[in-house]
Amino acid sequence: PGAELDAGKVVNEDILSGFPLALWGVAEIGTFGATKYSLGGWQSVEDGVRRYRNAAGRHRLKRQQGELIDPETNLPHSYAEAWNVLAALELELRG
Image (cartoon, rainbow, N blue to C red; front, side, top):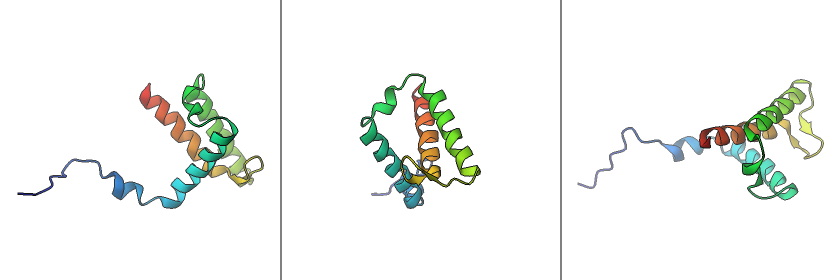
């Protein structure tokens, strides 16, 4: 009685709590985008999966070229790369 049967359940809190700095970075870049454009507007961008994958690739290439900070946002390119990968994945899964 009172047992919680968690076998086979996703352990989201345990998993997500392992990435506080990375998720904060994604939230920072998402806040920049929401302020520049609109909160949640990314969800209705035409051909979003392709566009967000391309944006992630541009940020990755800039980072690989040695430019660690995006001059537009003054935040690391890696934040924008991660955000764009997540946005593309979310749209793909909603697909």
